Length: 420
Ligand code: LLP
Image (tube, rainbow, N blue to C red; front, side, top):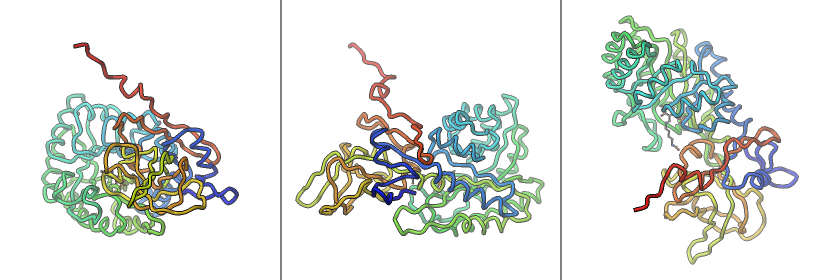
């Protein structure tokens, strides 16, 4: 969604010059595009609306991918629902004006407090991930006089063929209940007065560039839906999770949303099941960049380093998963191109944003780390007592500061010294 402006050859996001954005808000800064966020959401919503099986479908944005209130409020205004994994994410959704009746709650470790908050908010569904969670939810709901709507997250044991850290649908993962145990657990759930069985759920992994495992997962789940129906357990919805990938490399092709959804919706036609989706990365990943400034160039015998003011604490993905993010100059200039490792100031060898990138650089140059809208700011930390970055939402030629840069004082505001 970034482009070089024809007149001044400077990187723009929508109608905003990213050099001006950096001068105004400082660096490092995450910058998001309202238009790109909207387009990504509409690709899902429009495909659902155009298919007979998707008419009353609901996109539940996976908040974990980007939980900024500005971003959440945009999705809420577009009609989106939300997939949350903590009481904290529920609070953010409510603060952003999200509709609790469009919230599903995933995650293997829901606490009693989180269950109570979600029951009181009146969420759409708990995606239950274990037998013990089901029993706790039943007890908690009964105690406060509520009925908890649930789906079981079933683990269809399909290989999502993605990075092992983000593949979640294999039977050796900690997520969900094995599909072979699901029937017994559904029967048990149906017998609990404070539990209302409403759906079925699965999520097989993240950054899938081949959509065929989604179809495979659905085909393993549908026979279970039929068995449940034959036993009088009628489901209202099916939640197909998230996981659709994005391109990180120029020229890499990402699956078209409609091509991913159509085969799934076709298989659901006539079943009377409401379709829920939990996309995260695909809604935000390519709608955001991380702006950073070159502090120093360092030329070694074998290597050239560009030391920038963003680090692994700002964007953990390269250090954590060896993830590849494209990095481009905000104002490209002529000069001798060298092969740089783009590294941060953090005292760890793993602190890099990119390795072996050919470019012509000078001290003070601005760089944009692309595809940084998903699992970027949300995974940031204060390692090395580094205040977290500012976040800016762009709308045409307007900029909104949607999160202020942290101050150092705020980082230790909750701590105290002791006189020994
Ligand atoms: N639903 C559930 C239950 C999930 O666990 C996830 C992501 C999603 C939906 C959204 O998946 P998406 O559409 O974003 O692929 N930090 C990693 C990604 C972890 C994904 C965890 N679960 C990364 O930076 O690549």
